Length: 505
Image (cartoon, rainbow, N blue to C red):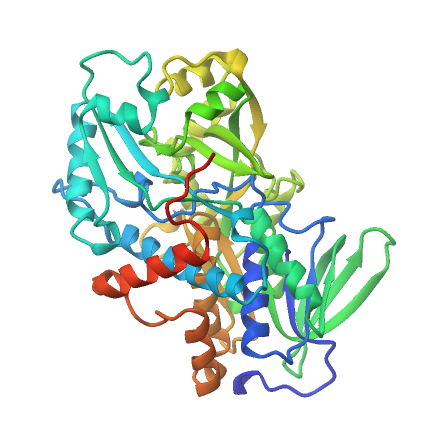
């Protein structure tokens, strides 16, 4: 363990991971590869891994690489396109693919076809202003080698060859445009997460406990953390002591971060956003669509509500979803309590939360409107992407909860952020992950950042550096600035992950 976390006193584990989602799985595997002798305990309040945000029905599943998600490339006031976030996300996804390739090559997870498939990523817009935006976006992104293979067209027939359903029944002469990246993927993060935990369970000194809820955590005088755990089946309670704690409980992270009482966690709040999908039930329609088609979000909509017509592989079967339709619930987890939001309000975060709320009244209004939508309203939104859609071919499916981060801001009092935030103690003994998108797709980069914060001394050693570079060969090298390395890396990971020249069938 890192020098700054050397502690005295008896411990039950070196590391405790709270939550059995993609983040804990990624961190657990990374740590055991870097330090095989570490003892790790993992606690999950549900009866299976990846049942909340990492689950296939609850997660966007896109393999967020910024190829098609227009919210990552906003138009600035001067009309130019900001691509910084898109480039960062694309680089981070390449890091994830390298790590997954390492897991596959070492036999630590199952056949990659079980969790990742090649599926083109498309952006699709209509109307003069939106077409002009998409062309500027294409011109800006293709200056970067990460996006050099992107195709752009305003030709309706070419778009129809890419995704027939979005053109069937559309008005002739309507001004449309689309981009396409054949390198896109569909990722089942639920399957990947469970694969990683199945591997971890076979490792020495690793114990995974389901139906166990963390009730409290407190730092001891000796620098260790006392974690109070309740077995939800037997009702038994016990205390566990660890040198390092990671709170990766999705929407449940904020309440636990508040319980830790670390100064760095003060002032954070959460704004829950729920989601729903329309799921296609007509097999003939499902077979005709082979792409992830993203459009522009409605004015006032949160980024996670960017509409998309989405081909996925779930439990080995092709599915077609449209949405998500946003909503509001005071729950922080899909399986949470309606008291989650009110209980999260504390003296140290009430001002940021009120300020963020006042600055986001349009978002509140939008969410209320979404909640009040009728099936016919949802169908009208779908028809913008699939003009021939009929209500009888679709049914409503509930997605997961996302808790967006609210944090202090000197000027505004509090701001609402639509990303992920790692909050760690100054001594590196505890860390929590807050927020949502792009989340799972960039989990490896997020956890590498956590290692840099909380295991800095270890990470600086020759042993850890060598192992990190074995798992992620481009570690520390920006792919966006090295075209040859980018091509080599993508060729290698596509081969190992079996996503080269493959299509969903």
